[in-house]
Length: 98
Image (cartoon, rainbow, N blue to C red):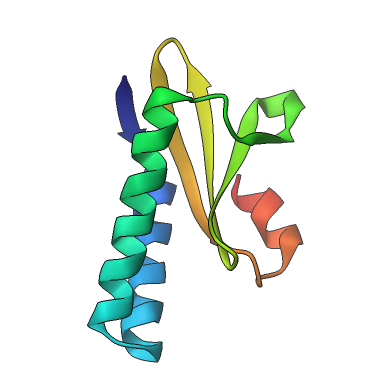
């Protein structure tokens, strides 16, 4: 299974890590990293395991933590990671970024 991080996914991941390190501490950052890695490993085995966010674009949403989701697209044995999203943010912004 190929894993491809889009630029938006990489940027949003770094932004969220920065938020965690400023708001909490390095232990929380490491816990989040591990949660995300575990979810990605699970998606490698069951890429259709998460619900559709929008069927029209074939985008799926995977909950990493109650406050954070991973949006991705699965096709041809490839996971295209689109965005790491803080679920407490304005949902209108989410649709614009996807």
